[in-house]
Image (cartoon, rainbow, N blue to C red):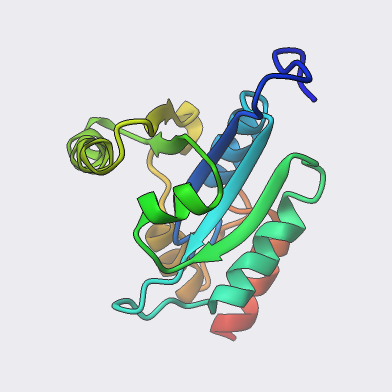
Amino acid sequence: MSEATTPDAPMKVAVYPGSFDPVTNGHLDIIRRAAKQFDRLIVAVLNNTSKKPLFTLDERMGLLRDVTADLPNVEIDGFRDLLINYMAQKNAHVIVRGLRAVSDFEYELQLASANHMLSPDVETFFMMTSPQYSFLSSSIVKEIAMFKGPISELVPPRIETALRAKYD
């Protein structure tokens, strides 16, 4: 229990949704920092049937579990529902979203506004990524890895190994 949680106070549960295909150091930066702010952080891996991810849902969840094993209040889960429905199932009231640059903000603001309209008791917390990760995306990592470029500064070693295996 965190210092802010008393026996009578509800747990502060947040959800950090995303595809995490693959998880990057930028994602981990947000996960680690958000885990300090909430009693429980659920990293919810989206199973988007309209996209063809490099890693399966189970692989993405397993990789996330591996790289967050040292964070006892972080839970990895998968979902394929409307985020607001998932939030209700998990009794969570905070959505964590990472922002890399101003260009992310407009899209994220639209999502936050739609989520607020659907469920006014759910808040969205925006976290700026650390400056060294402001350019980083899963797409960039996959492209560099596909062409055998260096990715050790962009992803944890476990993720680099998994990426190299996919592209070898």
